[in-house]
Amino acid sequence: MRVGFVGLGVMGRPMAQHLLAAGHDLAVWARRPASAEALRAAGAAWCESPAALAARSEVVISIVTACADVEALALGADGLLAGFAPGSVHVDMSTIAPATARQLAGCYAERGVGWLDAPVSGGEVGARDATLAIMAGGEAAVLAQVRPLLDCLGRTVVHIGPAGAGQVAKACNQMVMVNAIQACAEAMCLANAHGVDPERLWTALMGGSAASRVLEVMGGRMARRDFAAGIQSRLHHKDFAILMAAARQGGVPLPVAAQTWQQLNALMAAGGGHDDTASLLKMLEPAGRHGA
Image (cartoon, rainbow, N blue to C red; front, side, top):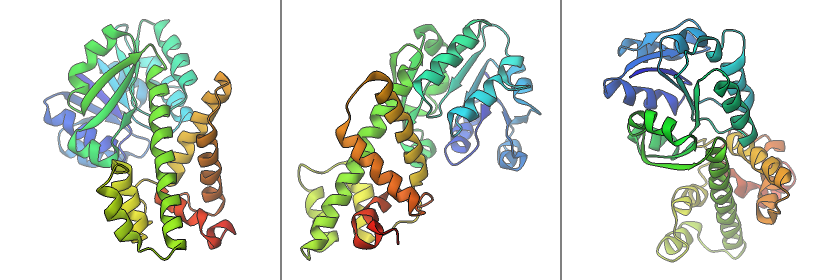
């Protein structure tokens, strides 16, 4: 397929490389042209604007940071909507609000352009290894049209429901995952208070019913006190803002998530936004509770 790609960060760059390796005719656009140099050297074409990218592509895939970024990309001056031909598709793999996904789907539908919100779970490793879990919201026919592309990027692709449903699923994923990170932090804090070696605790828990991917990775970082950014906590903070707004709009009580949200707020206030989310442990320790 003729594919456009926007969002060449730690996730997007390897994803775009997988599409090139699969033989697709890839073009890219980036706000910072330097971020596209490696892909251009590997054979990707360059477009001077999102509109130009859309005009030469059957499908454009984007993975950027926030709702405002996706809205500007799609609807801004010289944005994707200005270049798309009827029958084209925008697959947005960012994590954004379900309401924003529905709004954009409606704007595209008026012009005969398809939409899929297809956020992912699996992080940088999943993007690199093409093992992402992809949660798709949109029409089944649109998903079928772009399925060969998504199969290049992920191990599982699940059609959740109509536009916005993929983002609801991603919010649920983030809620379960970050609540589990907070639980790991509380376990480590309790162990420390009783003089228990955190690495031995982690080894024991990994052999029992508490074992999980979150405990393996994030609990391991806490046990080693390795808080260098693997997943910057500011991104999980952004995701929880989306989650809690969706809960408020639906009148849904999320008592555990609300407590985790407050801990993320505390971590941001303490200046930990660029540290790994394992830094939630620090917010339970005396220095962290006082903002040190």
